[in-house]
Amino acid sequence: MALEEKERIIIPDESGEEHLFEVLFTFDVDDTDKSYMVVVPVEQKDEEEQEVYAFRYEEPEGNEDDLRLFQLDSDEEWDMVEEMLATFSEEEEEES
Image 1 (cartoon, rainbow, N blue to C red):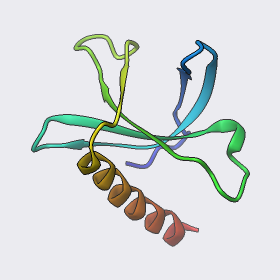
Image 2 (cartoon, rainbow, N blue to C red; image 1 turned 180 degrees about the horizontal axis):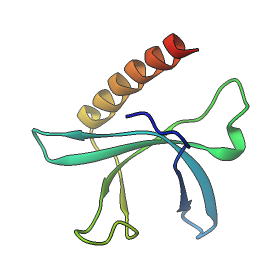
Image 3 (cartoon, rainbow, N blue to C red; image 1 turned 60 degrees about the vertical axis):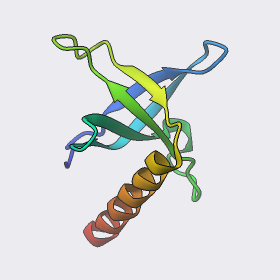
Image 4 (tube, rainbow, N blue to C red; image 1 turned 135 degrees about the vertical axis):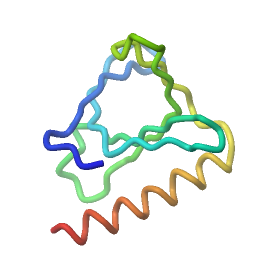
C-alpha cells in the first residue's frame, strides 16, 4: 500500500500526553482477522535510528475515526510485525 501523503495519527501515552506518529504501513492477517499498524514518532523522523511502534487495531464498523489500539502481547505477533517491517524496509530501499 503506497500512500501519496503519509498518514498521521495521534496516540496518547500512559499519562495522557498526546504524540504525533506517522503510519509506516498497516496490514491484515487473514487467519486471525486482526489488523496491525506500524508507526514512527514524527519528531524522530530525521534521526538515523528511528524507534518503531506496532499496535493491533480495530475500527468499529461505520466509524473510521474511532480507532482502537492494542499493545502486542505475544511473541508470534512481534515476529510477524518484524517480518513485515523487514519486507517494508527492503521495498523502501529499492524505491530510493
